Structures are given as structure tokens and as C-alpha cells.
Image 1 (spheres, rainbow, N blue to C red):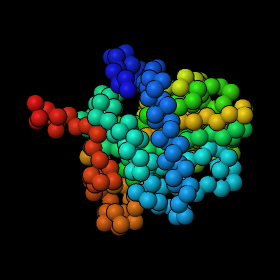
Image 2 (cartoon, rainbow, N blue to C red; image 1 turned 180 degrees about the vertical axis):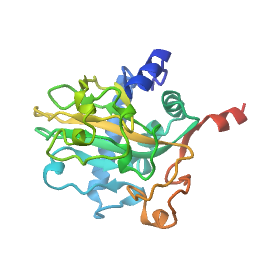
Image 3 (cartoon, rainbow, N blue to C red; image 1 turned 90 degrees about the vertical axis):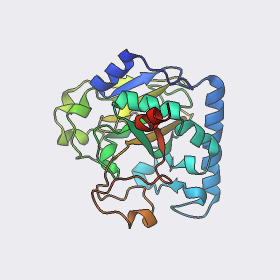
Image 4 (cartoon, rainbow, N blue to C red; image 1 turned 60 degrees about the horizontal axis):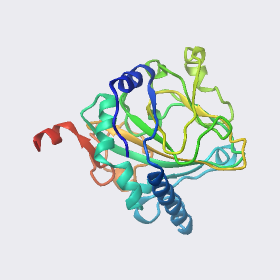
Amino acid sequence: MNTELSQQQIDSYQRDGFVVKRGFLSPAEVVELKTAVLDAIADMARTQGEQMVAGGGVKMEQKGYYAKVFTQRLNLWRISTTVKRYMLASSLGKALCDLAQVDGMRVWHDQALIKEPFGNPTAWHLDNPYWSFYSRHSISIWIALEDATLENGCMWFSPGSHHLATYENRGIGQNMGELFTIYPAMGQIDPVPAPMKAGDCSFHNGLCAHGAGPNMTRGRRIAMTCAYMPVGSEFNGQQNILPDSYFQTLTKGDVLQNDDWNPVLYNKVRESSLV
């Protein structure tokens, strides 16, 4: 896993709210992670629970238009040691901290996103407003496990939109540009497509507007993503992916520091104390 970043890439991320990194995974690593992701999804499909499955994975309820946007499964790291090794790697955590310019990162949730053949487009949206904490430094990685192209629904980003965003949002529905009714200035920005080869990845800020086109092909667009929370982030009152047993113990303003549900990947303070 190539987690090295140049200063130019860090500066680009800070300016635009996203950056694409080529060759993040080697061909062998793509095969390993893709196999682990698909195996974990198959394991979840064999279970009978609608929400929580063995080990704490989450099966998302998908209906109507949204069900045709992508096949979505969360927290595969909790049921796959291979997914966990990739998504919670300390070297990745350091790269995330360098990009976001924070001292430490916890995992929020991972997410397999498979745009099935002829799948619907993914409307423009922000990520962080959905989550149980608000942070201008939250960050996600999006890893292409198959080539992501203009034809099969690659990612698109609105450069600099993270500087304009608050925590208002719109859901992923049929109106592709509904987000821009909240943020008209974002609608004046020329979006940038991010086609990727298998093994490439992107990083994007949780307040950077992004979306994806439809899959106009007979193949699947397979991607693995993971969202990360800066150490010290506070509970905002929303449950999101938190299990009931944990959610019911929280009061708005509490620091989210459950090491079982949101373990730390990397913390500069901790690492420096070990030197």
C-alpha cells in the first residue's frame, strides 16, 4: 500500500478538498482487497439480520431509486481481518492526518459501494452532515477495485466546495443537483471527474461536494471506501451507524472515543511519546 504523499498533493487537497492518488494499491493488493470485500459482502448476505450481522457489520436498507444507485455494505472491517488490515493501517492514518492537518484519526465507517450494471447516478451530496459528529477535517478514502470510468460512474468532485459548505445537506435522490439549491455558489463551480484505474484512490474532505454518474455498462463498478473522524470529535446527537447500546450512553457534546467501535489508526501525540 503506497501511502506516501508529496507536499503538492497535500496542498492540492487543502485547496480543492480532494486529491487523486495513482497506484495506491499494487495489482496483487487489489486482488486481495477486492476478494476480501466481495467475500465479506457474501457473508453478510447469508445472514438473516436486517441491520446488524455477525461481528458488527451493517447491511443498509435500500429501496426504490436509491436501491439502484449502488449496492452498499458498511463496517466490513468488523467482520474481515483483511479489510481491517487495509482500512485501519497506521501508515494510512498518518497520510490522512497529513492531508487533513490534524493530530489523530479514528475510523468512522468503511463502505463497499458497488454501482451495478446500468445503475442510477449518485446525486451531489456532502458526507459529514450524515455522521454523528461535525468536523471540517473529516476525510474519506475511495479506492477503485475495478477501473472507474466516465462510462461506469466514476467520482466527480466540486473543487473548493468544502470552503463553502456548512452542515446542511440533501439526500441522494433523483434530483442530481438538489444540493445546489442550498449552496448556489457551488453550482457555479465546474466539477472535475476523477476516473481511476484499479488500485488508484482519492481522498476527499467530508464537506467536499461530490457525486457520480450512472453506470452505462454491463459490468460492475466496484469501490471500497472508508470515512475517518479526527480524534477529539464530539457527538452531535445523530445516531447514524452507532449501535443502540453505545448511542444510548451518549449526550450531545461527548467526545466520541469508543476504541472498539471507532479505533485510532494514528495519533501523532501517541507516536511521539513512543520515540
